[in-house]
Amino acid sequence: MNDVAKLVLPDGQTAELPIIEGSEKEKALDISKLRAQTGYVTLDPGFVNTGSCQSAITFLDGEKGILRYRGISIEELAEKSSFLEVAYLLINGNLPNQTEMNGFSDSISTHALINEDMKRFYENFSSRAHPMAILSAMVSSLSAYYTEATGGANIDDLQLNAARLMAKVSTIASFSYKKSIGQPFVYPQDKLSYCENFLNMMFAVPTTEYEADPVVVDALNLLLILHADHEQNCSTSTVRVVGSSQANVYASVASGILALWGPLHGGANQQVLLMLQQIHEAGGDVDKFVAMAKDKDSEFRLMGFGHRVYKNFDPRATIIKKACDRVLEKMGVDDPLLDIAKKLEARALEDEYFVKRKLYPNVDFYSGIIYRAIGIPTNMFTVMFSLGRLPGWIAQWKEMMEDPQNRIARPRQIYTGSQLVQYTPMSERG
Ligand code: CMC
Image 1 (cartoon, helix red, strand yellow):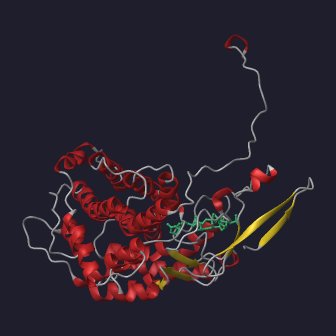
Image 2 (cartoon, helix red, strand yellow):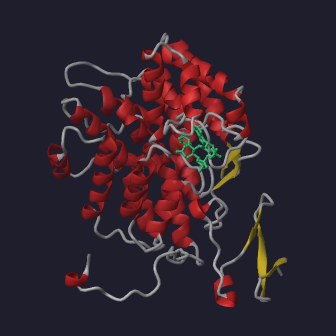
């Protein structure tokens, strides 16, 4: 028997709301029957205070700066794991043994090609198209090829579609880049690891031998692990909302990609780099930009700063900041933007505006510096985020499909428009 909270309403009605407790002792009021019992709904713009589901995938404590996938800390995964292993962990719930890992990795290699017809799609996008627009359209198009994919909890189909997605998104993303620079597509190679294969498709050309630098492979692996899931963020909630109508996994993930694109979400990583470049070109005066970010008459925000949930520090940003120094040093890169980022962070963190609002660097603040050092162009940064977040989207979609409590997502509203109005014929309108 759950504990209950008692709600007393102004009209004298009372409601008993069951208290739900999570495995880390966080507590929620179950209001699912509130309207049926009292006629009241809850109002929570931006879902700041609303739990939309129960989930066993990712634990996040924003006050303490904790992030865990399936109970394992992000710090430990970043140090010891690989992106594919983390993907397996998120999707299947446990770390794989060697046989399971080999099977997972082989199934991804097997599905890495895209239908040859799809290559022609690239010819029809505008040369100005953002790679995220292309990525979402191409992922959505996958459902035109795998027409048997449906919403629902058929686990074999999901494992197959998960492998297809994990494999093909990497191919689609690198093909978009090749198209944008007018180079021939480079086909996936089974013999390469996931990250090596992606780098090979991005940077190999038919005229020269290419072998990915292990420092670059490790850096990519790290960034993808850190982005792999983040519980009910905007794009993941989008994947769940779309999937809740039993839309197929390709349609659901394509919608997640579009939600991620926004500059307040994954699109922030591109904006951070543009901002750092702007500061650099303006002579490196970070004070001016901090002042602009504080000015309520200016639309400017410090990109890569602040988070809905983290109110102390973002553990992913801490790991990436350390990796920045390591990767750039190993690669012999001296990037003035890293110095600007550090100066900007230090300046903001001593400013009352940022301290009072608990605004800290988030995952996007330093990631672009590493992407830039390993040769990823700025407009591909959010595509890289998508590649990393993909296993999280798949895992959350799967969990929802298997959840007997799953219902179509359909929030309520409080209507604030006109009451009944008579139709005015055109001749009588002013
Ligand atoms: N620069 C200046 N002021 C800020 C910033 C910022 N980056 N972020 C928040 N604030 C202020 C905001 O103006 C508000 O001030 P006030 O209380 O005076 O009105 C206060 O801090 C609270 O901000 P909010 O917008 O109500 O907070 P939120 O939880 O709705 O938004 C956020 C979170 C991440 C969208 C926001 O902090 C932001 O826009 N950050 C910049 C964009 C960014 O880096 N996004 C990546 C997020 S992490 C990765 C991901 O999710 O993809």
